[in-house]
Image (cartoon, rainbow, N blue to C red; front, side, top):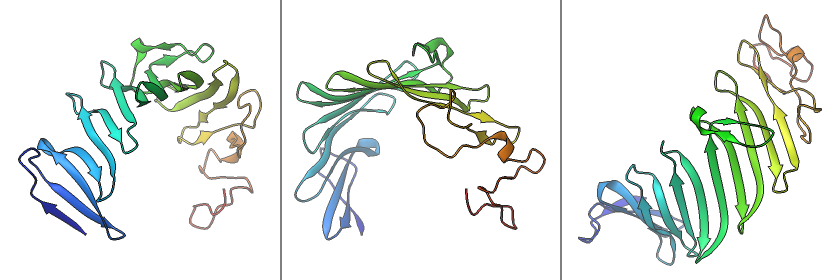
Length: 212
């Protein structure tokens, strides 16, 4: 059940209440339909939502008083997410866009085509891991790797594509260390019919698959 109720003069749009298990969930909006808070009769789930000039979320306070904030680069792409309790940083993710050097993790921002080149994870200020990505000329994921905070390689995944756009991932080895998955090799798909040819991918009469 949803209903709209007039608000005070301080918040000039609407209060929408939705009932979940007999509990009324209230979503408060400011002018221009910008969300300000989410709460029910007994608790506040999120409040003090603030936004950047372009409309992206700047910060919000969660029900446990932790503050989640976001920053953006010059292209308005999310560049950092941070969770704070008071003056203590609990968790942080940073995002870099551009061409990534898979060996060093360096990202050339001058080649930013909108895709994430590297993600870094921090807990309590200590780096946990970073994930690195490269893409082919069509913007499809080519390489993905995760390195621990120590710099040691945790896993690496290599993807290839055929003319139909099918994505391949070879057997675990130098290309895909420390991963567990069902490989898809070029021999698994017919280049003439674009259908699986191996017993592990048995086609049904209409051309779909019932096992894969």
